[in-house]
Image (cartoon, rainbow, N blue to C red; front, side, top):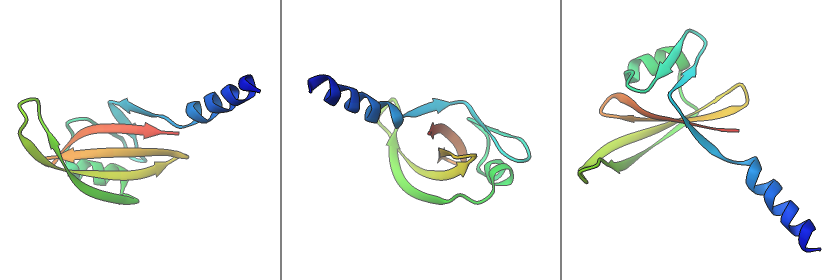
Length: 93
């Protein structure tokens, strides 16, 4: 019985995870970390959703950030933009 429960837990935990990447491919090109917000919109179009939040740099200074969600080819991408530039790209199956 313990093995069945362990197998079920591992299956659930391994199916959902997020991975950081350096770029995402859109219909007309690539969006990479450091690209502008305008290029992200040009390449990927309008996002499915977005939310604003605060992130802190290495020195502890706060910066306004907006995370945009896209669904491309059955993969969910979250692209965080800080000061008008792409800060991070995460994807999840």
